[in-house]
Length: 129
Image (cartoon, rainbow, N blue to C red; front, side):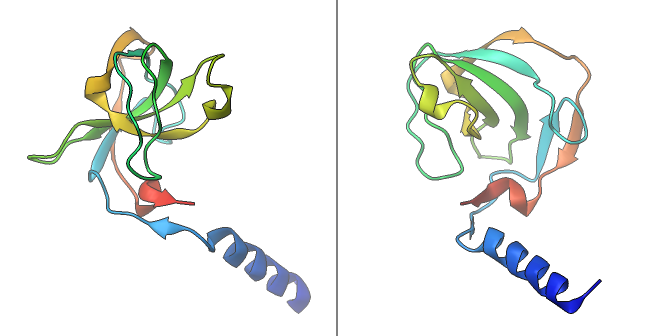
């Protein structure tokens, strides 16, 4: 590998991490449908609006469908948060954005898997761009 290529690779990696903010972890473990947390666990319907307090979270509007990807295992005294993505024709600009939200603002309507795995969360789970 040539030095210019290595330098370009390093610059590219640095460029991707510039502007990334590390936020506090919300939990040490999460429940997922697979080891990579890439499979949807369930569908849920928003029971109420939720306004994201910071970049780790997503905005949810009452009535929106939410794809749930993981469920954080709460620490004692902490809230229960899930991660997911909202999908709605009315809020197209939010489609595909994955973030956390309180489990209390949604109702699960369909579970896609009964087999789940509990894995540790990583710092990257709580970074913001």
